[in-house]
Image 1 (cartoon, rainbow, N blue to C red):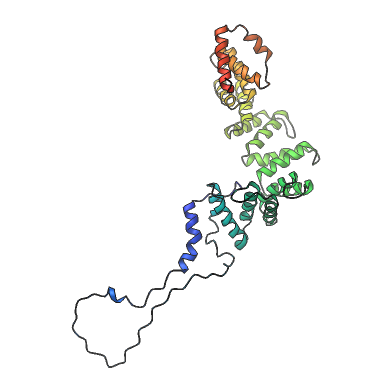
Image 2: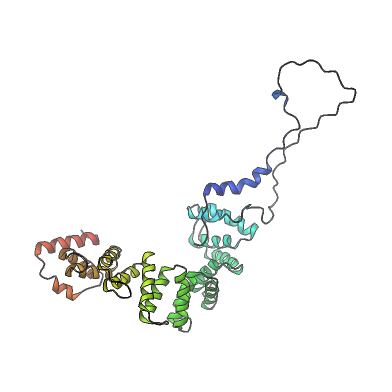
Length: 355
């Protein structure tokens, strides 16, 4: 439920109790209490001939009503998402209680989706996939796109009820139509795979574009691959690189590697080898074997960075341990002195966590 908005927890407790607090305030008395009157003596005043009016009794406090609140009375500001505020801060039991009230008294689809999320992930309540599916279903029927996607994934996996791929696809398509980028991305994969749905590369590209435009880095990387290879779209290396850059900035490691290679070679973007090497280092430290191999190469040959055969050998061995061997580097680095090889081996062992 990532489209919901955070809110301060202090505000949550105030908003939730404000209505009852206001009703419990006693009404002010008609006259000030005697003990508050000034004590100085005054001259006697002649009594009026008209009969004195009996004093008005003080109003008695009105207790807060105990009846079930009417719809809309529980939360005074429906624009303040107290439920997600508690959820985001790890106060899952509070989120569960608030969401239950919203769902019961306000008929709030977002609260229903939150209940599905809490039940599905055992947050603040015991995991119950059946109840999660029930709440997701209610929210989906009310038009919540997040619930549609979550229920679709449950129907695919068979959690909370029997697997139903036909229903799952319909739910995912409805969610994607409402602009859910996760649904659009996953529906694109189904069109690309061609098993659940007939393969349709153009439709897959259209859905990836919806998700990519919404900022989904996985969709940006996938669509970049489409443009790079001319799959479902006209081949366009410049568009591919722009998408790779966007996904890279969002932290997609595969996109970082591809964008670095594009910058290194000047493909679809001006050549910038130092920037490319810096990005390869970042991806290598995030355990990308391809980045580790490419970094070893540029360090070994001194392209875009100062030559460093010891560091190159280190990253070469690390990449090789993850299945990314390179016979050409084996041969090129074979003449590294024994002392330097020992340093590289020690560094690679330290990186891999070996003793």
